[in-house]
Image (tube, rainbow, N blue to C red; front, side, top):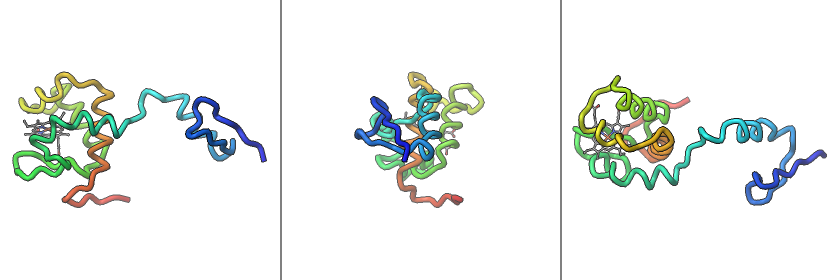
Length: 122
Ligand code: HEC
C-alpha cells in the first residue's frame, strides 16, 4: 500500500492513503483562504446573540432565526448587507467591521447550530 505522510499538514500525525486523500490534500493546498472556522464564528457571534439569541434561535419575530439556516444563504445575506443589495440599518451597522472571513466563520457557525425551524435538506 502506498502511503503519504502529510508532514506539517497532517492532522494528529496521521498517515493517509494517497488515492483516497489526494483530492482533500489538493483542496487544502489550493484553497486555504476559504476554509471556515466554526470556533472563530462562535467567538464572533457574541454580539449577535443580543438579537438573534444565544443559540441562534431568536425569540422575537423582529429578529430572524439563524440557527440551522443554510450556510450559503447566511453568507449571501451577510454579503448583501455589505454591498447594499439588502438594506437594513441595524444589520449594516452590525457587519461594518467584519471581514469576508468573519462572514464565512459566522455562517459556518450558525448553520451548524440546531434550528427550531425546519430546513429541507438533501
Ligand atoms: C441589534 C439587533 C441585531 C444584532 C446585534 C444583529 N442582528 Fe442580524 N438581524 C437583525 C435584524 C433586525 C435582521 C433583519 C433585517 C432585514 O430585514 O434584512 C437581521 C438579519 C440578519 C441576517 C439575515 C437573516 C435572514 O434570514 O435573512 C443575518 C445572516 C444576520 N442578521 C446575522 C447577524 C450576525 C452574524 C450578527 C452579529 C455579527 C448580527 N446579525 C447581529 C438584528 C440584529
